[in-house]
Amino acid sequence: MILRIFVSYACWFLVITTLFAGMPADPGPVPSLQLSFTHVMGQQPLVRKEVTYTNASGEAFTISRFRYFLSNFSLEAANGSVVTLPPAYFLVDDAIDSSKNIRLDSIPAGEYKSIRFLIGVDSIRNVSGVQTGALAVESGMFWTWNSGYIMAQIEGHSTAVNTPMQEFLFHCGGYKSKDGVLKYVTLPLPQPLTISADKQPRINVTANVEKWFLPDTVSFKKITVIMAPGVKARQVAGNYQHMFNITGISN
Image 1: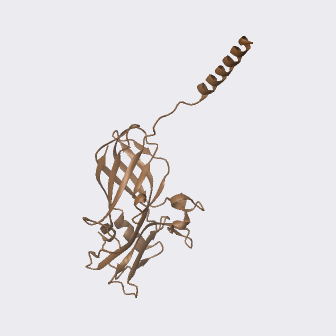
Image 2: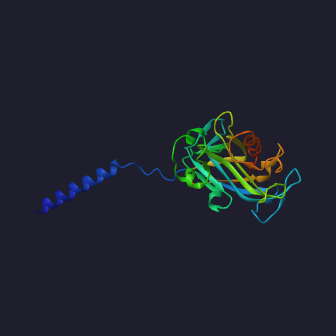
Image 3: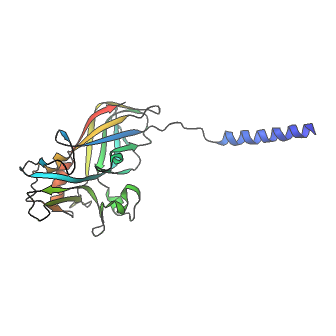
């Protein structure tokens, strides 16, 4: 009887040991990177609706909405090799603080010297049907009549606009080559960025709304509404591709 019990326990021990031996080892923490975005107008924090600004044309205006997509991230390693990160799409909205902090996962450990990303949503996703998450149609950043995403969006009011509401709407979209507004941005890092499993570094980035109107000067008297791909959208996109700047790194 005692022998049978001993054999039974031994068998169970062998089974459990075999099961655990077949399980994959815990990979531990996955290296990741945080990007923290701060929105500014020139040298001052962006304040929607409450603060009046002046553009290069001398026109007073306020900002009521500021949103943009970021995707297709990659990092340049210290040795010059490029690491393309897993597909990720983010909608950054000035009205939603949590959206201004994004996390990039599955980054190989190492040292990096620059980061690259796309302002907007790549052409494949523009023609991939119904999306979820940041790319959901419910976000209000998709033209159902034009079958494409609004890559970046800014809205506000200006006394220079000759309409009863004095409202300007810049919804910049277009993924086809002729009217494309997709812009890649490469930002050199002010110091080496070290990625490892035991730390989560953060890159602090400013997005300067003032750059939407320069260097190709935008006047609200001439451009009031952008709601489709075209020359005006390309002009503004050519400006805002320069709005990002890295202000620091927390390793």
